[in-house]
Image (cartoon, rainbow over all chains, first blue to last red; front, top):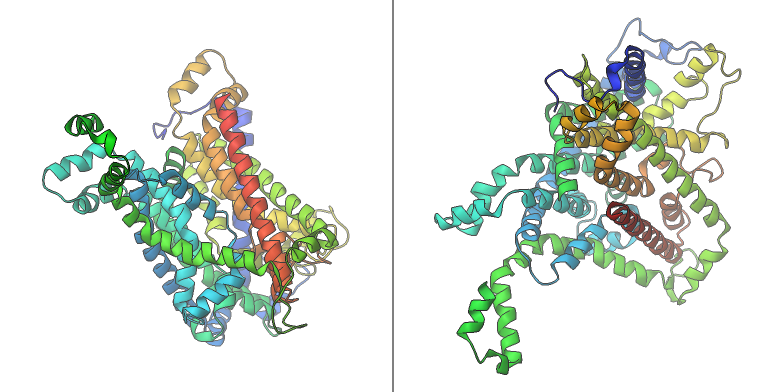
Length: 286
Length: 318
């Protein structure tokens, strides 16, 4: 990183170009931010200020009525809890499984190694939405219909390929000598992985965790298909059902949208720097 | 080294033939078999939840499964696949899928690259800009799509208001509802969602490029465009490849945006393959046909991705 305050390329050498660049960046940031900003503003509006010919940009008497309505009405709190459970569960299970697989692919050269790795990569291209029909049968056979575990299981499966690939990339970057040295010192292979390798792979683990968490927080198709009762519904399903109910107003819908977004945003603020670092070094060098 | 020693220890090993082979496999397994154990949990999950469903999808595609017409599946061989060629909506859907995927990737890439190039320089507020750029990616798809639906709203939407107060349009546009703008609106929304991911990934890739290269080229009188085309882009190739491939697969397989934003309408004009298959299965209950379509779709993704990987390898070697 060029933290020394000097410029990287010659882009900023001309004053005019620099100004144009920064204005352009401002536009892009606005493009990125405005939809969320506008939905936030809408969420605090009273019904009177909602449908006006000239949009109200700053609500004159902001209200939290909409948030209260949403939380009370659609068992939103419940959806929230379900989403957190599904996302955390998926993250933990996928990480454990992918850590093992990533380590296996990185450190062992067993027969069919490359073919199996290739198979994992191909699975990344399988669209979840299309496997719904047969997956429905699998979930039914396992007796997991309308259970939150069906979502954890399905999300985990679809997260494994990329996760394994990323983590393998990270393990590849850690010199084998390190664990060999610790194994000579009396560590078991597992001990070496646990005490020596895992701590070094933390950035990769965090990057993968973010990817899995966001993916399952976002997941809609499985959740729509495998769950039917309110008790196990997740946020995206709750939100998409809100849209189709007639009496709901845009300010209430906005409040629901804000509520569904805020947890991920908070998570992002803390771990922002790992996102790209992890993905790039894991994916490209791996 | 190790295998040489091994041969010296067992000089007669060549004669033993098959037993030796078994022994070798055993040794190999002893040394590397732990690898199988490690990938076993992941492998089992993939087999149960992906491979098996894929296989039963292939089987389903050979049957006519129409619960509305007849209760039991009827074997019809390749009948469903033949039907694909007669499906007029499908051709339109394929073209739309192409427009949707390519349009989204190209726009995402351009906006992402521009953002990353600027963010790669140092200026005040850089950290803030980078954090704000991530918001679209952090928003759940349904939430993002909803936000845009509100912006696009024909009567009360912000976009129509801004455009008409700037006198760019005179009548409000029904962005997601009219045939001429629906696809554009969907692509714009997907671009919004995807460009920050590209930007952040490309930026991370750029920061791995040594500053010395830029300094040396600047001494030689290179301007920004020279540096871009001779240093940045060539060195970024692997990252560009990964992000465009990932984003392409995600866009091709994307369900939530179209589902929430347009539902495939108006008149099927924003229908993409994934939503089309879903509709065939769960709205029309043509399960067998939907299965055949799914297989087709998977093959398309696979071939396109493999072709793209080939192309990239080829361009790296030349």
